[in-house]
Length: 390
Image 1 (spheres, rainbow, N blue to C red):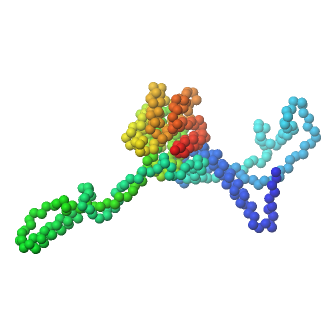
Image 2 (image 1 turned 120 degrees about the vertical axis):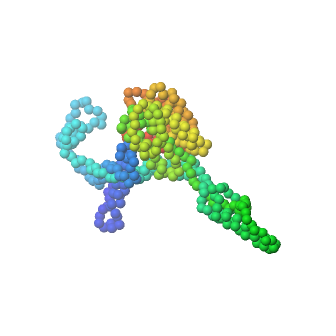
């Protein structure tokens, strides 16, 4: 159905650009969402600030217009082998389609727009439709902590002893005793006047509430030799976007970082995202270190625990059973345990398939990224499972 728009100059109040701007915004939004996977898997995204800009191709916008076709000349005959609905005699030698070679028709206008990491996170939030900040699993623990000193009191702990005020209390007591002796006409020199418990004065400190996190994200990354540079960059991109998003959306989350080969170690955030290593692979080493960390610092009775592990799924055979046991144990003490397998080998069966088959716990969420463009879908699946369930 054709729609005709009156663009005559007599209609003063009509703004022709409004509809164009709306359509332009829709195309921009559509292109950004279609390119999320490519953007998130960029190596340059790691370590960038919120003002880092990324370029996205946008198809040009054209006004609707009539296009005149060519009149068919003569009668087109078939051979008798044509199928119903097939068009005959419509080839255009000027077209540049298929393997016909170069054409001479006008191409489609494509230009680039820029988006910052902060704006990118807005699209992620919108696409996921995540819950509000007061969800139970990301609640806070309110504890009391020391505030400002407000006056004095007779009882307290030694670190809060107000020495000057205590001495003043002793002097006041001594002067009081002298006045009492004088009133009784007793001429007695007070030589020794020791401190008594009643002299002691302590600072009164007003308690103030302190909000602490009761949710911890434990990032575990395989940095062994089988994780080549492209896999490591993809793993770091995965964790970087995840950490940026979570810090932006939720204010009270603690983070821990573990990297492993055959041996695992706890590292700081900078080392996690930048240091490269090599060696063999024991998946269980990283998972068991996470279990030790939980046992020492993050009791499941108090903390909501969310480990996320990234690897290419290759593991030393002798460690497979240990890895299976560690995954099950970690899932039992966690609210959600995410396993991301990145660019797995096509020549062997990886741990993703065994974990998916043998571990039936609902809070274990395995995802697989076979190509870089799949990264966003994997992130979306894990985040949706992790943040939407009660």
